[in-house]
Length: 186
Length: 179
Image (cartoon, rainbow over all chains, first blue to last red; front, side, top):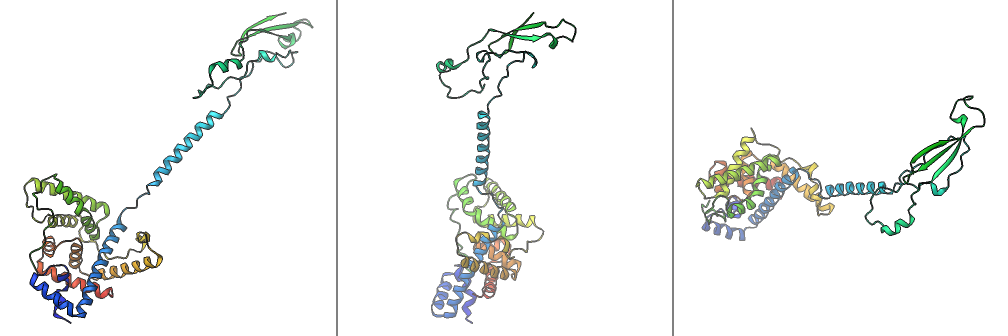
């Protein structure tokens, strides 16, 4: 074993005085064993350094990947948009015509023109058709009377009135489809 | 051992609290300081806290006109002492195997390369276990870029003792790692 071997690390770390460093350098150039040790120390230094880095990386808290919150928020936004679209497509329940007669009554069928159409969805649309076109298809306001014949038995207990007496109900329908006025006559 | 240790690149200018030199110093030394602390056994969060505190202390030190020679050694000494205060005894886990935590090796390597690197880290971990506390600390500070004189100041031992300790520790590692 060379006497210089104890100075090899200090030489590698540039800790030796200049004169001594030159002496060690000259020895290393001629000594194969010291060359081998110098290479080994260099390798050990690198490995130790790598191990320190590995410890540091291993102890770092695991982070959530960047794309996870982005993906989550995109999913939420897509779900909200889907819900909004589905709600917009649901047809509103049709408005039923008001019942004015019992099933047993001989009710004349009201004309189609007299029945108001289904209520338009109240939802606003961004690109609504021009008002002029819509007017052409709108149902005209109706204020005509409808007459319905109602047997007396349907309104009064049996025997309260003589047989064969009927009543006529005269209904006036408002533009919104509701019954505006009811008049009963014999 | 020579006393002509290379001073830090920074203190050529007079440092002042909040100056750009301090910011550069932070950028340059943050990672080595964190690595030193984590290898001493502190958690990542604890190490971050200690380094932050050390730089706050540096600001105070500079504001009060403290000595500006060898700021790097000064910072390592501060974090070393703070780490000691946080632990009654040093963590002996430095040197343990990282089996369950070596996913980072798979970043950009073939399976064979990963196996070789794992094996190399296992061998060095086993060898580190055989070192004394002083030998480990000397090697850690040396890996942090400190000169022997600075290591001696941090650990409170003579520069010649540092040289002997580093030499002994390196020889042990070289023999145990079969290099």
